[in-house]
Structures are given as C-alpha cells and as structure tokens.
Image (cartoon, rainbow, N blue to C red; front, side, top):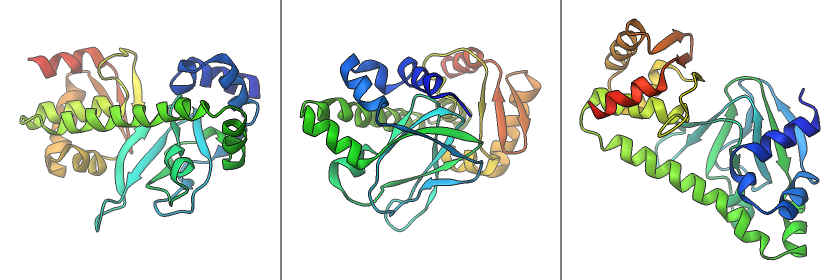
Length: 228
C-alpha cells in the first residue's frame, strides 16, 4: 500500500487537484482516507445512494454507464489523477456512473461530510470541485469526437488512445485494461473487426495483446495513423 504522503503527491502531480490553490489542496488531502480495492471490486454502481468523491492514485478503474434502458456497460477507463463523485456531492442524487477496479487500485476517499466542511469554511471551494465536471466534459467531448470518425480503423484507434489517456499527448507506453469485446462495443465495430485490427497493430509493433489487457507501445505512431 502506498504511504499517505506518496499518495498525496500523486494526487498533486496529476489531474484535477494540481490546478487548484494550495490552501484548497491541503483542505482536501488532510480530509482524505486512503483505501484499497482489489481487481474486480466495485467502488460504487449506477443508482447507488450519493456518497463522497474518489481520486485514483494507483491502478485503474472501469467507468460504466447505463443511459435510459441500456447498460450498464463499460464506457471509459480512469487512471491515476482522475477524480469521481462530484455530481452526487453537488446534487445529493443517486450515482450516474459506476466504478470498478480493473486491477488492484488505491483511491483517496473524500466523504460527503468532509466536502460539506470544506465548502462551509470556504464557499468558493465549490468552483474548484466544479473543475472535475469540466474534466469529465472534456472526456465526453473526446469520446463523441472519436465516434464521429467514419473510417472504422481510425475510429478504433482513436477510442483505444482515449482509453489509454494518450490522446492528444503522452507518448509513453501504457496498459489498457479492456477486453476485445468491450473495446469493440466502445468503438462501434464488430467483435471480429476489433480482433483483426488488434492483430494487425500487434504485428506492426504498436501493441502487445494479453487477456483483457492491451499494452500500447507506441502511442505517437498510432496517433500518426489518425492523420494518414
């Protein structure tokens, strides 16, 4: 398990919290509890009662949605630096998405009581919490943009890069915790088409395939395929 100071530093170095003022950062971190979730363990599910916020400091979470009559199904993957749960804190309504650990993960948990305490002491803090929603909106826009790519090969690559948080930047290799079936669904292609594309990318040296895992070796090379 990460030491608390190391977990705090990860939260400060990546994602939402680093864009907030130091006094707010301290207020959040001193109220967070570090929690562990084994692979396959839900953090919360669509429709659960409102609760606190969670920030990933190690591992990976699958994000599931259930719009209207469909779902729940996997829609995104979240990596360290990502926070969730602000919508329930804002509205006190049931959870709109579900989170499940796709590998052993560690999360910072900020309870509703802690959020209320921070805002009671400084009402401007709501603006900083609202930045998380802006991050989620950016992911949703990127997802919509990828699905509007007509060429199925390029659309598939764009979705894969989004899942690895490698679009439009970050050229380091990254592991994506997703099955071929889930990836095919997210990219709106047939399961057989997804398999054929992945095998082609593996032969070309762009990815390494394993059970429910895809390691992206060359994000920049994949990104260039979107421009070809």
